Length: 109
Image (cartoon, rainbow, N blue to C red):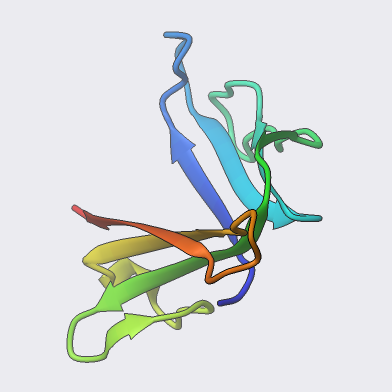
């Protein structure tokens, strides 16, 4: 499994008007998350340095489902064609065994 950066633009959880960028990535065995301030104009503000949200992460992987091609790792030539997204997080086990793997798959509109 590889490492990836997932950036999502969403409406702010705070209820503010505009859009907010949220970014996740793996750094030094931790899953990191960074939030940008909400913005209404492009380019949107960029996320800050981030904070750790999960320890003992051995891998963070993202794939998009492209019809006719199946699950594809980034970079995607035309991500607008994706109809699904898969996020995989693997955690180190305390006894050094096989990592615990968590997968979330979502349909894209």
